[in-house]
Image (cartoon, rainbow, N blue to C red; front, side, top):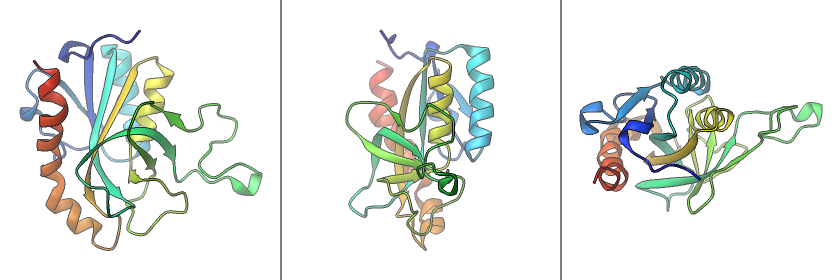
Length: 187
């Protein structure tokens, strides 16, 4: 059984301080990983080995591949959208000789595709939303037996305006996450 989420046993994992300034979540341990799967995996592994949390809560921004998706969303399923070894007979999004595959968090929510590029056109492996760290963080949590929770704020529509829209909307996500997720856990 998973332990109750509390500030003392949980790491809030975010790529950039702009996405969730620590002063908005007093009493919570916040880990800033940097951008991308490699940075996220290294930072999260070091933190899990040192702090031994029961929970990792990933929050960050994401691009929506469906214009009807907006605001803060819980993620239920995560794929690695840029793993492509089809020439060797492997399915798009699957790492050769790795049993992890896609990661299912259960419950309600969206499908997230993680990859190491900022999406401005639809990727070949379609999901509801896209980011650059979620899969790596989920895999670290799974590897070390840590409960993983993932929330994404839709900052853009993963199109030609994505960079400008992200810069405009990044701060709005922190407010939504704190109100919907952190405040209820802090009572």
